[in-house]
Image 1 (tube, rainbow, N blue to C red):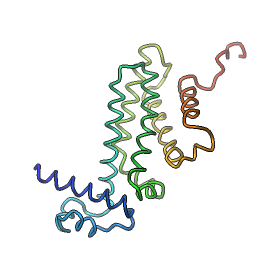
Image 2: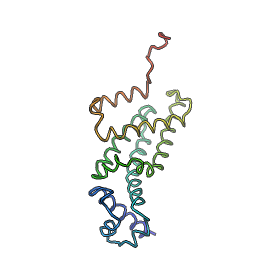
Image 3: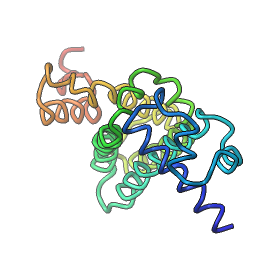
Length: 201
């Protein structure tokens, strides 16, 4: 069993390196088999096609991100600080993940739906994590959240929506990283309403 796991892990890592260097489109199953020194038959024992091994690469990389988010989840900080740290860690680490994989950066932007298929499990886990922090904040009287599950789902999708401009650097035309972080923090924790809104109603 250990040998099987090691062989599969080797093939995933070899595929990641080839995808990062040459891109998904320019890498073949033969290339992966040759570079792993395991042969085509062994490769096809674990993966039916290139899409499957690409999914495995993305899932493995997202495990790195999930590990970082788990560490944030264990921090002894207030719920509001924890949820902000989770969101910013998500953006920082997924940027590192994409940029460290060279040519995969182009694939990330070109075929976002292929990436979406590979990140279903990660997204579900992150939503559960956000939900737990929201529940903690609500019980402590810090958050006013009517539907914790739905709010967690929306927050996770908001962070996902920020990934591409954050990774590509498009946000730089709108402000510095610190300015954007302050704006996100204010919006998340204070909303859009004026602090003295009662005087204007």
